[in-house]
Length: 101
Image (cartoon, rainbow, N blue to C red; front, side, top):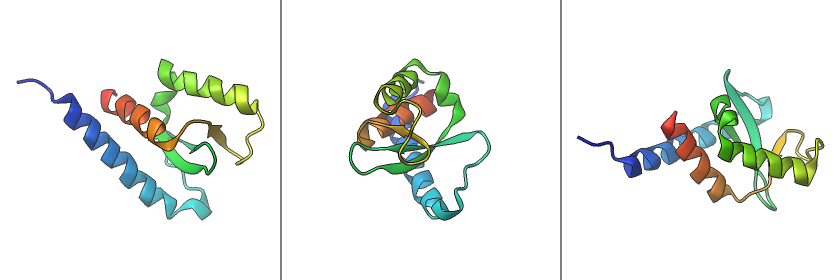
């Protein structure tokens, strides 16, 4: 019996979208659960996401962090970590990373 990787990726995307909707209700209080990190993602209009800190060690996520450093340095206009990629790319990457963990 094999693991259906595509099904796991779809489930991870659904979890991230649900998490994003639930956490967007708490934006004014800046609630970030223990073991998670809030990041702003988008090229023109930025959206807040909360991801597990475990993704920080993954080489693909570290590439995004390097891009962020190159574009913004240590000054992030949103007041938090800003990642300069489109939202769908970010969702695809983080869903793959969180489904593997």
